[in-house]
Length: 134
Image (cartoon, rainbow, N blue to C red; front, side, top):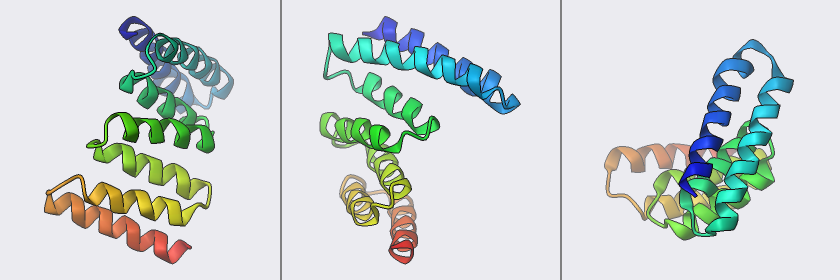
């Protein structure tokens, strides 16, 4: 799984850093697709590969495939329930889909996974923004 993750991450980085900033979207997208294939291979070898799910979620996010991104981040929260960032990223994906109630629910869950006052303050700020957006 790790070789697929490394290869996929390399493709993702190339697309994201070398092509996307120069508006070469077709090239960037080709690398994102190659990255997706690698991450999916890693997942097919080991469904519990958290890194592969997280990486696939990132690829879907930059491709603006928010429903797919949400599905993968949701899996990360199931496999790694203490990963605060996964809940936040899932909330971001939901908010792009205008699923604000679900986004807020994920942020409230994230608050239960940390004792860091700074992080909790940030999460409260996000929740407040989403409640206004609803």
